[in-house]
Image (cartoon, rainbow, N blue to C red; front, side, top):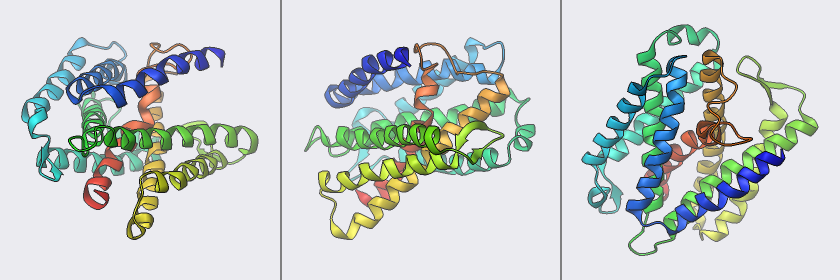
Length: 283
Protein backbone atom coordinates (compact mmCIF):
# COMPACT_ATOMS: atom_id res chain seq x y z
CA UNK A 1 0.00 0.00 0.00
CA UNK A 2 2.85 2.40 0.85
CA UNK A 3 4.38 1.85 -2.59
CA UNK A 4 0.99 2.42 -4.26
CA UNK A 5 0.53 5.71 -2.41
CA UNK A 6 4.02 6.96 -3.27
CA UNK A 7 3.55 6.13 -6.96
CA UNK A 8 0.12 7.81 -6.97
CA UNK A 9 1.54 10.94 -5.31
CA UNK A 10 4.10 11.19 -8.12
CA UNK A 11 1.84 10.30 -11.05
CA UNK A 12 -1.31 12.24 -10.13
CA UNK A 13 0.32 15.72 -10.19
CA UNK A 14 2.06 14.87 -13.49
CA UNK A 15 -1.19 13.76 -15.11
CA UNK A 16 -3.14 16.75 -13.78
CA UNK A 17 -0.43 19.17 -14.92
CA UNK A 18 -0.44 17.64 -18.40
CA UNK A 19 -4.23 17.93 -18.62
CA UNK A 20 -4.38 21.56 -17.50
CA UNK A 21 -1.23 23.18 -18.79
CA UNK A 22 -0.02 21.48 -21.97
CA UNK A 23 -0.98 23.09 -25.31
CA UNK A 24 -3.14 20.74 -27.36
CA UNK A 25 -0.31 19.52 -29.62
CA UNK A 26 1.84 18.58 -26.64
CA UNK A 27 -1.15 17.07 -24.85
CA UNK A 28 -1.66 14.86 -27.91
CA UNK A 29 1.98 13.77 -27.66
CA UNK A 30 1.38 12.97 -23.99
CA UNK A 31 -1.67 10.92 -24.96
CA UNK A 32 0.28 9.17 -27.73
CA UNK A 33 2.99 8.18 -25.23
CA UNK A 34 0.35 6.62 -22.97
CA UNK A 35 -1.15 4.90 -26.02
CA UNK A 36 2.19 3.34 -27.01
CA UNK A 37 2.99 2.19 -23.48
CA UNK A 38 -0.46 0.64 -23.23
CA UNK A 39 0.02 -0.97 -26.66
CA UNK A 40 3.22 -2.61 -25.42
CA UNK A 41 1.25 -4.15 -22.56
CA UNK A 42 -1.62 -5.17 -24.83
CA UNK A 43 0.91 -7.13 -26.86
CA UNK A 44 1.19 -9.35 -23.77
CA UNK A 45 -2.53 -10.11 -24.09
CA UNK A 46 -2.15 -10.97 -27.76
CA UNK A 47 0.69 -13.45 -27.25
CA UNK A 48 2.63 -14.97 -24.36
CA UNK A 49 5.75 -14.03 -26.32
CA UNK A 50 4.93 -10.37 -27.14
CA UNK A 51 6.11 -9.18 -30.51
CA UNK A 52 7.20 -5.66 -31.38
CA UNK A 53 5.03 -5.98 -34.48
CA UNK A 54 1.90 -5.49 -32.34
CA UNK A 55 3.20 -2.17 -31.01
CA UNK A 56 4.31 -1.20 -34.52
CA UNK A 57 0.85 -1.91 -35.99
CA UNK A 58 -0.89 -0.04 -33.17
CA UNK A 59 1.45 2.92 -33.64
CA UNK A 60 0.87 2.95 -37.40
CA UNK A 61 -2.88 2.88 -36.89
CA UNK A 62 -2.79 5.80 -34.47
CA UNK A 63 -0.47 7.66 -36.86
CA UNK A 64 -2.93 7.13 -39.71
CA UNK A 65 -5.76 8.64 -37.66
CA UNK A 66 -3.55 11.61 -36.78
CA UNK A 67 -2.90 12.18 -40.49
CA UNK A 68 -6.63 12.10 -41.20
CA UNK A 69 -7.38 14.44 -38.29
CA UNK A 70 -4.54 16.90 -37.64
CA UNK A 71 -5.01 19.55 -34.97
CA UNK A 72 -6.49 22.07 -37.40
CA UNK A 73 -9.44 19.87 -38.40
CA UNK A 74 -10.29 18.16 -35.11
CA UNK A 75 -13.29 20.45 -34.77
CA UNK A 76 -15.65 21.22 -37.64
CA UNK A 77 -17.41 24.27 -36.28
CA UNK A 78 -19.37 23.40 -33.13
CA UNK A 79 -18.89 19.65 -33.58
CA UNK A 80 -15.82 17.42 -33.88
CA UNK A 81 -14.62 16.06 -37.20
CA UNK A 82 -17.04 13.43 -38.53
CA UNK A 83 -14.27 10.81 -38.51
CA UNK A 84 -13.85 11.32 -34.76
CA UNK A 85 -17.58 11.06 -34.12
CA UNK A 86 -17.68 7.84 -36.16
CA UNK A 87 -14.73 6.44 -34.22
CA UNK A 88 -16.32 7.23 -30.87
CA UNK A 89 -19.56 5.63 -32.06
CA UNK A 90 -17.69 2.46 -33.02
CA UNK A 91 -16.05 2.49 -29.58
CA UNK A 92 -19.44 2.66 -27.86
CA UNK A 93 -20.60 -0.33 -29.91
CA UNK A 94 -17.41 -2.15 -28.89
CA UNK A 95 -18.19 -1.62 -25.20
CA UNK A 96 -21.63 -3.13 -25.75
CA UNK A 97 -19.89 -6.17 -27.26
CA UNK A 98 -17.42 -6.18 -24.36
CA UNK A 99 -20.35 -6.34 -21.92
CA UNK A 100 -21.52 -9.52 -23.62
CA UNK A 101 -17.98 -10.96 -23.49
CA UNK A 102 -17.77 -10.25 -19.76
CA UNK A 103 -21.26 -11.54 -18.89
CA UNK A 104 -20.74 -14.77 -20.86
CA UNK A 105 -17.14 -15.35 -19.78
CA UNK A 106 -15.52 -17.92 -19.87
CA UNK A 107 -17.72 -19.30 -22.69
CA UNK A 108 -17.22 -16.13 -24.73
CA UNK A 109 -13.44 -16.55 -24.64
CA UNK A 110 -13.66 -19.58 -26.93
CA UNK A 111 -14.48 -17.17 -29.76
CA UNK A 112 -11.25 -15.16 -29.50
CA UNK A 113 -8.72 -16.68 -27.11
CA UNK A 114 -6.70 -18.37 -29.88
CA UNK A 115 -6.83 -15.52 -32.38
CA UNK A 116 -4.05 -12.94 -32.24
CA UNK A 117 -5.86 -10.94 -34.90
CA UNK A 118 -9.11 -10.64 -32.93
CA UNK A 119 -7.28 -9.74 -29.72
CA UNK A 120 -5.35 -7.08 -31.63
CA UNK A 121 -8.62 -5.66 -33.00
CA UNK A 122 -9.99 -5.56 -29.46
CA UNK A 123 -6.91 -3.60 -28.43
CA UNK A 124 -7.32 -1.06 -31.22
CA UNK A 125 -11.01 -0.64 -30.40
CA UNK A 126 -10.04 0.02 -26.78
CA UNK A 127 -7.01 2.27 -27.11
CA UNK A 128 -7.54 4.38 -30.25
CA UNK A 129 -10.96 5.78 -29.20
CA UNK A 130 -9.54 6.35 -25.72
CA UNK A 131 -6.83 8.55 -27.22
CA UNK A 132 -9.30 10.54 -29.31
CA UNK A 133 -11.74 10.81 -26.43
CA UNK A 134 -8.98 12.44 -24.38
CA UNK A 135 -8.20 14.85 -27.21
CA UNK A 136 -11.82 15.80 -27.90
CA UNK A 137 -12.72 16.44 -24.27
CA UNK A 138 -9.51 18.42 -23.69
CA UNK A 139 -10.10 20.59 -26.75
CA UNK A 140 -13.76 21.47 -26.06
CA UNK A 141 -14.20 25.25 -26.29
CA UNK A 142 -10.42 25.67 -26.06
CA UNK A 143 -10.33 28.86 -28.14
CA UNK A 144 -12.65 30.67 -25.75
CA UNK A 145 -11.65 29.07 -22.43
CA UNK A 146 -8.32 27.22 -22.38
CA UNK A 147 -9.15 25.37 -19.15
CA UNK A 148 -12.76 24.30 -19.80
CA UNK A 149 -11.85 21.11 -21.65
CA UNK A 150 -9.29 20.27 -18.97
CA UNK A 151 -11.97 20.66 -16.31
CA UNK A 152 -14.31 18.45 -18.34
CA UNK A 153 -11.69 15.75 -18.75
CA UNK A 154 -10.70 16.03 -15.11
CA UNK A 155 -14.35 15.49 -14.21
CA UNK A 156 -14.35 12.11 -15.97
CA UNK A 157 -11.13 11.18 -14.16
CA UNK A 158 -12.68 12.18 -10.82
CA UNK A 159 -15.78 10.09 -11.55
CA UNK A 160 -13.62 7.04 -12.19
CA UNK A 161 -11.31 7.66 -9.24
CA UNK A 162 -14.27 8.20 -6.90
CA UNK A 163 -15.92 5.01 -8.15
CA UNK A 164 -12.71 3.00 -7.72
CA UNK A 165 -12.09 4.37 -4.23
CA UNK A 166 -15.69 3.93 -3.11
CA UNK A 167 -15.77 0.39 -4.50
CA UNK A 168 -12.56 -0.52 -2.66
CA UNK A 169 -13.71 0.65 0.76
CA UNK A 170 -17.33 -0.50 0.39
CA UNK A 171 -16.21 -3.89 -0.87
CA UNK A 172 -13.65 -4.28 1.89
CA UNK A 173 -16.12 -3.42 4.66
CA UNK A 174 -19.44 -4.68 3.33
CA UNK A 175 -18.69 -6.95 0.36
CA UNK A 176 -20.47 -10.30 0.49
CA UNK A 177 -21.99 -10.96 -2.94
CA UNK A 178 -19.70 -11.50 -5.93
CA UNK A 179 -20.19 -9.17 -8.88
CA UNK A 180 -18.49 -11.26 -11.59
CA UNK A 181 -16.91 -14.32 -9.94
CA UNK A 182 -15.68 -15.83 -13.21
CA UNK A 183 -13.93 -12.61 -14.19
CA UNK A 184 -12.72 -10.92 -11.01
CA UNK A 185 -13.58 -12.85 -7.82
CA UNK A 186 -12.52 -9.98 -5.55
CA UNK A 187 -15.18 -7.58 -6.82
CA UNK A 188 -18.54 -7.47 -5.04
CA UNK A 189 -21.97 -6.01 -5.71
CA UNK A 190 -21.68 -4.01 -2.49
CA UNK A 191 -18.38 -2.56 -3.67
CA UNK A 192 -19.89 -1.73 -7.05
CA UNK A 193 -22.80 0.11 -5.43
CA UNK A 194 -20.44 1.92 -3.06
CA UNK A 195 -18.40 3.09 -6.04
CA UNK A 196 -21.53 4.31 -7.82
CA UNK A 197 -22.63 6.23 -4.73
CA UNK A 198 -19.19 7.84 -4.39
CA UNK A 199 -19.30 8.92 -8.02
CA UNK A 200 -22.73 10.48 -7.54
CA UNK A 201 -21.28 12.73 -4.84
CA UNK A 202 -18.85 14.04 -7.47
CA UNK A 203 -21.75 14.57 -9.89
CA UNK A 204 -23.69 16.56 -7.28
CA UNK A 205 -20.90 19.11 -6.90
CA UNK A 206 -20.12 19.12 -10.64
CA UNK A 207 -23.63 20.36 -11.48
CA UNK A 208 -22.86 23.64 -9.73
CA UNK A 209 -19.26 23.80 -10.89
CA UNK A 210 -20.19 23.51 -14.57
CA UNK A 211 -23.38 25.58 -14.09
CA UNK A 212 -25.49 22.91 -15.78
CA UNK A 213 -28.81 24.41 -16.88
CA UNK A 214 -32.01 23.07 -15.31
CA UNK A 215 -33.15 21.44 -18.54
CA UNK A 216 -29.92 19.39 -18.77
CA UNK A 217 -29.37 18.38 -15.13
CA UNK A 218 -31.19 15.04 -15.53
CA UNK A 219 -29.22 14.31 -18.70
CA UNK A 220 -25.96 15.26 -17.00
CA UNK A 221 -26.71 12.85 -14.15
CA UNK A 222 -27.67 10.11 -16.63
CA UNK A 223 -24.48 10.66 -18.66
CA UNK A 224 -22.40 10.51 -15.47
CA UNK A 225 -24.12 7.34 -14.24
CA UNK A 226 -23.59 5.64 -17.62
CA UNK A 227 -19.94 6.74 -17.60
CA UNK A 228 -19.45 5.35 -14.09
CA UNK A 229 -21.11 2.05 -14.98
CA UNK A 230 -19.06 1.63 -18.14
CA UNK A 231 -15.86 2.42 -16.23
CA UNK A 232 -16.48 -0.75 -14.21
CA UNK A 233 -16.94 -2.61 -17.50
CA UNK A 234 -13.54 -1.36 -18.68
CA UNK A 235 -11.95 -2.81 -15.56
CA UNK A 236 -13.70 -6.17 -15.94
CA UNK A 237 -12.89 -6.37 -19.65
CA UNK A 238 -9.19 -5.95 -19.02
CA UNK A 239 -9.50 -8.63 -16.34
CA UNK A 240 -10.71 -11.25 -18.83
CA UNK A 241 -7.78 -10.50 -21.15
CA UNK A 242 -5.31 -10.74 -18.27
CA UNK A 243 -6.92 -13.97 -17.11
CA UNK A 244 -6.66 -15.53 -20.57
CA UNK A 245 -3.03 -14.38 -20.85
CA UNK A 246 -2.22 -15.80 -17.41
CA UNK A 247 -1.19 -12.38 -16.07
CA UNK A 248 -1.83 -10.84 -12.67
CA UNK A 249 -0.94 -7.35 -13.89
CA UNK A 250 -0.70 -5.93 -17.40
CA UNK A 251 2.89 -4.85 -16.68
CA UNK A 252 5.28 -3.67 -13.99
CA UNK A 253 5.96 -0.11 -15.09
CA UNK A 254 4.25 1.49 -12.08
CA UNK A 255 5.50 0.23 -8.70
CA UNK A 256 2.61 -0.96 -6.58
CA UNK A 257 0.11 -0.44 -9.41
CA UNK A 258 1.19 -2.87 -12.12
CA UNK A 259 1.11 -1.56 -15.66
CA UNK A 260 -0.32 1.42 -17.51
CA UNK A 261 -3.37 -0.60 -18.54
CA UNK A 262 -4.05 -1.47 -14.91
CA UNK A 263 -4.35 2.26 -14.20
CA UNK A 264 -6.34 3.32 -17.26
CA UNK A 265 -8.56 0.26 -17.81
CA UNK A 266 -11.65 2.02 -16.42
CA UNK A 267 -10.81 5.23 -18.29
CA UNK A 268 -10.48 3.47 -21.65
CA UNK A 269 -14.23 2.88 -21.48
CA UNK A 270 -15.34 5.96 -19.55
CA UNK A 271 -13.58 8.60 -21.68
CA UNK A 272 -14.94 7.73 -25.17
CA UNK A 273 -18.43 6.98 -23.83
CA UNK A 274 -18.69 10.30 -21.98
CA UNK A 275 -17.15 12.13 -24.95
CA UNK A 276 -19.82 10.82 -27.34
CA UNK A 277 -22.67 11.61 -24.94
CA UNK A 278 -21.28 15.11 -24.39
CA UNK A 279 -20.95 15.75 -28.12
CA UNK A 280 -24.52 14.72 -28.93
CA UNK A 281 -26.52 15.92 -25.93
CA UNK A 282 -24.56 18.21 -23.64
CA UNK A 283 -22.35 20.41 -25.83
